[in-house]
Structures are given as structure tokens and as C-alpha cells.
Image (tube, rainbow, N blue to C red; front, side, top):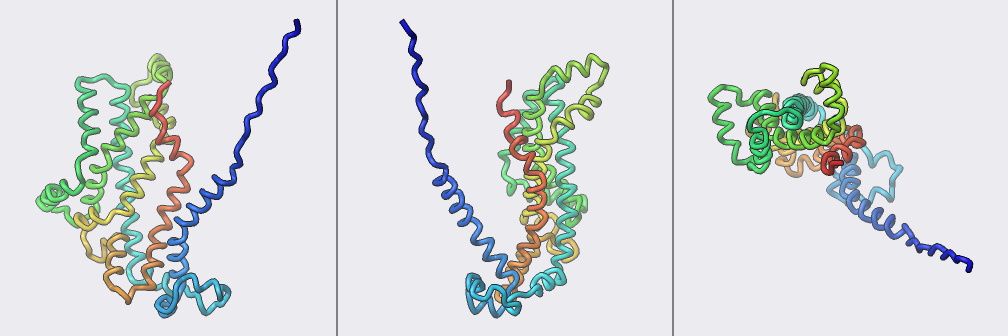
Length: 290
């Protein structure tokens, strides 16, 4: 008797074009408002009032329809200073919580000490504390010690609000690293600081970059914390406060708002696209062990 082998069944593969078409359609719908904002940022105020942004496609190469004056005015009227102030707020507000959280996460993941689980649960529980509930008590403390309206005030506020999430993400990631590398380093005589600095930190670059993206975007786009703790004085204004001031001018700033919005978007986009290769790895690592 001859054995007959069954021919492998052919799996019918569906065409990927409907998926591509759907993704392209959704992406286009999301991009249309940004495209309109970008076009209006290069138009004269009278043109913006007279017609919609889509009318420029009828005279796309007419040089009289475009101008860089909106960006020049935005940068000359205080937005350049606000951009620098926001950068001065954002960088320390990212570095401080990442530094503290990295040490704390290593301790929670690889060091044994009394109450470790309870302390970690407490830190995670702080993520549910509403930001608005803490503003007045912190503001009273700042007023008492005389730091209201200074950069350290907003640095500490952003660091405190960002630490619970940072510790949670970093601890989960560091805890998922192979224990063999920690044991090998301990056998070779490395102490906890050497293990942390030479092994854990280099291996944790994806999750550090992921949190840096989150924290930077949060601080850069923050309005409430900067308004409460830093104020509205021109020498300390951040971009969100400056944008709110422009919006309050009404028709007089109709051509400046689009330009100001794109100036404020440049650095966050650069940070996101520069670190995006770490983003998914850092957010998903530690979710599944083994």
C-alpha cells in the first residue's frame, strides 16, 4: 500500500490594499487641520480673513500669497524668549525625575529591604492623585519658602508629579532583566552602584528614552503648572502662556497664532522622532517575563 500525502492546502491571502487605503484615509483626515494651520502661518492677515486656506492651491506659486512676516513677528514679540524659557523648564524637569526614578527603580527591583512591596505600592498609588488637588498646598509651601515664580519651583513640581509613573515604568523594565547578569556581576565583586551604573543603565536606555518622551511632551505642553508656579511675567513666560496671551488678542493675532503654534511644535516633534525607535521597546518591555 502506498502512502499518499495530502497536498498542503493553500491559504487564500486577502489583499492588503483595503488596509492601506483605510490607514491612508485616517492619516489624511488627521493631517488636514495641521496642513491648514501650516498654510495659514505663511499667509497675510487680510488673506486669512478673506478666504479659506484651501484657496491657495489655485495660485500655489504666486509669491505674493506667501510671507515669512508672521514668524518674524512671533519671534520678535516675545515668543523667542518664551521658547528659551520653556527649554529651561523642560530639560531639568525631565532629568531630575529620570535620575531619581532610576535609582529608586533599581532598589525596588534588585535590592531587599523591609517594606519594599508596600513602598512600591504607595508610589504606584500616587499616580492616581489628581494634579489639581496638590496645586494649592504646594503653592502655599512655595510662598512660605519664597520660591514662587522661579524655575526651581516648577522643576520640583514637574519632578514630583512625574516620579510615580517613572518609578513604575523603570522598575517593571529593570525587574524583567535577566537575573544572571546581576548574579555574575556580584560574584565578580561589583557592588550595587557598579551594577546599576555599568549594567542596568545601559540596558535600560529604551525605557529611559520612553519616559523622557512622555515627560518632555508633558512639560513642554503644560499650561496649568507653569501658570500657577511660574507666573505670567514676560521674563519667565513659557510657550503655552505666550500662546494663551496671543489667543486673547482676538482678530489682531489671527495670523500669528498658526506661526506660534508651529514654532512651539518644532522641538517636541524633533524629540519624538529622534527617540521613537526606543518608544515601543521601552513601553512594552517588562509587561511579559520569560
